[in-house]
Every structure is written in structure tokens, then in C-alpha cells.
Image (tube, rainbow, N blue to C red; front, side, top):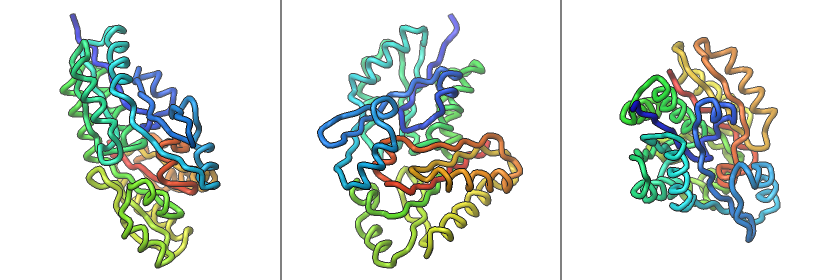
Length: 281
């Protein structure tokens, strides 16, 4: 019997629904806790609701899926005909999602390869797409994992936030870095490095920060073929304008995705987020 490798990821990959459907990728939802209500990302709470709650200074936290949620997912995927599963997740530096998937994989009816990609948002989504395309071409789980890891190694993610306060509150960036940004009244540019968020540059104004974000993304894409994603939270006009400029500046652009981040990432970055993921092919 030929092998059927199924790809599982989590809701922070922010893959367009059409891509999930086309490649038969299953996304396990993380949870956002708004006040005393636990809500599933993507189905029960929107990023806009989180942005509004943050602006009103209401408590917003996030939590990983339970191992039983992953176990149920793996059983359903196996029942649909999968003989192997590759489960790709956001950086373990941000969430216990990877650990929950590892626990569940031990009880799966078919072998599961769980991968900490070190990525998040479409940086994770591009890894999932690479794995799915490899599986569709007949590759086994090892080949799908290798494709995802190659994509992760080549992918860069940069983003601008209006304030570091939300990242500090959620423990995603050090208090010293957050205080530095506030004390100097600078606009921070951040990057994803080794699965963690790090301060990349400090820029004096929002307009200069966004211009610098564009410049860095275009330089990273270079002349070769690349996929790009532009993310935002409650900043659609900024995101559309940035995407239009990158479309003109990147000669080897293959696909360009523009989307609002989901509730989980939005809870930690706050309104005004503008991010760019560059994934050379």
C-alpha cells in the first residue's frame, strides 16, 4: 500500500483557508482567554476582538491546545487514510504547543513526526506548505520534514510594533529591552531569531520604521524567487501599501499573501503590528 503523509500544523500558521483545503492541511487551534472565557482561535474569536480588548486594557492571555486535542486530531487524520503524520508547530520558545503534540504523538495509531519549526505566522505556514507539496509529490514523512526544515532555515520574519509593552506583558521579550524602547521613545523593529523575538533596530518614527522594514524585506528577498507574507493587526491600510511597494521592488516574487494575524499573535503584539515574512524558494 502506498504511503499517505498528512500534514498537521496549528492555528498560528495563519494559512489562508483555501491553502488549507487545497493541501489538506489540518490546523489545530490555540486558545485565547478573554476575561473568564476560553475561546478557540479562528472560530470563536477574531483578531479584531482581541485588538479592541487590548485597547481597553482588558486581560488577554493565550494557551496551548491540550494533548487530548492533538490526540483526537491524529486519530481523525489516521482514520481518513493517513499512514504517517508530520506535525509542524510554532516555536517552543513561545508556546507549549510543541510539547502537547509530542505527548499526543505517543498514542497516535500511526507514526507522527513532531517538528518545532522555530517559526510563527506565515513563517510557519510556508514550512507547512513545503511539507505538503513534498508529500503530494510522493515524498515520505522524512522527506516532508526535511522540506519543512529547509524552508524554515531560509525564511526570515521581521516586524514593527507600535509598543513593546504587549510583548513584555506576555513574556515574549525581556523587560530591559521593552524599557529601553519606551525610555528612548523609539519605534522598534524586531526579528525572529533562533525561535525567539529579538530587537533588530531602533528607529525614531513609525514612518521611518516601516520604510526600513520594507528595505530589509526587499534586501532579504534579493533577485531570486521568493514568497512573501505581509501581516498586520488593525493596520490594513499600512499592510496593503507595504505589500504594493514590495510587489514592485521584488523581481522574483512568486506569491504574496496579505493577512491580519489571528487572535493569539495579536494578543502578544497589540494593535498596529506590521510584519513581513520572506521565504526564498
